[in-house]
Amino acid sequence: MENDSISCGCEVVRHKYRDKDGKEYKCLVSRLNRIEGQIRGIKGMVEDDRYCVDILTQVSAVQAAIKAFSQELLAQHIRTCVLEDIKSGKDDSVEEFISLLKRINK
Image 1 (cartoon, rainbow, N blue to C red):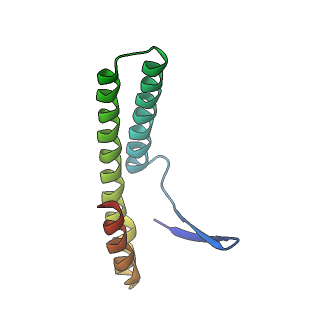
Image 2: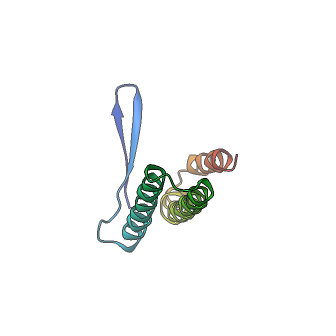
C-alpha cells in the first residue's frame, strides 16, 4: 500500500495505490458498476415517463448502494491507510480520520 501526494498548482492531490487485480479493488469497482447501471435505469424510467413512486423507489435503492460503497471504502481505508500511518508514527492520520467521520456523519 502506498499513498502519494502530488502538487497541482496550489492543491495537493493525494493518491492511494490499489492493486488492480486485488479483491478490494474489484469489490469497489463492481459496486460502482452496479450503481452506474442503477442510475442509467433511473434515467430510462424518467425518459419513459414512469410513475414517480417507482422512480423514487429506485432512487432509494441507489442511495442504499452508495451508502454500502461508502462503508466498504471506509473499512478499507481504516485497514490500510489509517493502520499503516499509525504503524509508521504518522499520528496526524488519526486527526484526519476524525475530521472525515465528522464530515460524513452530518
